[in-house]
Amino acid sequence: MEWLVLLIPIVPGIFWLWVFYQTDRYEPEPMRLILATFALGVVSIVPAWLLEQGAGRVFPFMDQVEAAAQGRLDGTMLPIFLGCFLVIGPAEELCKFLAVRLFVYRNAEFDEPLDGLIYASAAALGFASLENVLYVIDFRNGGSVQWGTLVARSLMALPGHVIFAATWGYGLGRKKFNPRYPLWATLIGASMLHGTYDFVLMYPPLRPLCLVFMAVMVPVMVRQIRALRHDSPFKPGGARAAEVAPFTRRAAERPPGVPAGLLTACGGCGVLSRWEDHYCPVCGVPLDKRVVFCGRCRKPIDHASDPFCRACGTAIWPK
Image 1 (tube, rainbow, N blue to C red):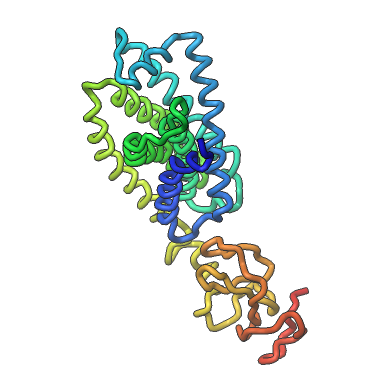
Image 2 (image 1 turned 90 degrees about the horizontal axis):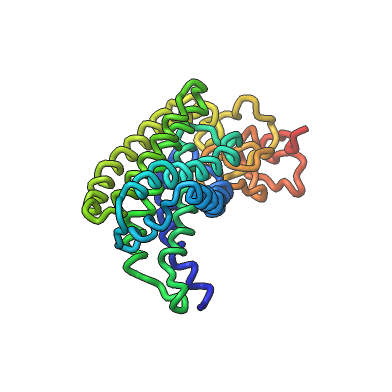
């Protein structure tokens, strides 16, 4: 088996990651944190599996779950029902949640409500991408790709994982700016949604309801994104928008509080920022320190040789 085949099931996860990343319009998160959270989502499948296996030793349900996943019903559905709602849903959502809560929640880049949902989707897609590898690659037959399964999971399972995680991601974004927000309720809700989806998928008579589930939950998630984006302090007219606006090329005067020294241009959106900053305050792209401007007159300068701006005489290097 060629190892490159393992990348095929991951491609849909990267695509959906890009789609959800585009919803973060006002203050996009640094790609390094998004990819790191995606990787932690991949890793989080290990503790989730351990929790499920441990619970399976106390209450045997895994054999029935595996049989149902293969289209075989062996006996009553009660063990599957309890396993989906009490073990699989809570274990997987908790592990994805901890990947975000422990890694990026306290990071300074987590600075608007929508970030909770963005990082939640990254962790969820990392988790689902590894699941894709396990479900789509037939390791028993030389590592062949089951294309039908890949298409079905790309259209259902991957967005499904994002829908589950978006529930507690919404709560995480709210909790960041409102300590009284009941985050625990959104985590329980995500677990129940996950359990519902899995149970409906495993019980053949109910499988058509998966389409109904997606038809209902996708608009709900879209409304969550819009609500969180509406409350962004970086949107036009928001609290932080007034702080970053003076750094744009359109500003006629030197930004207040910025030393009359260096400004540097963002290669992504063209915003002018303080030379001391490492990332653009608007889009999060690393700043290009090779192209700099005078902080007073905003004329390009050659900072390698000029101690003063040739246009206005301002000292270039901030003290």
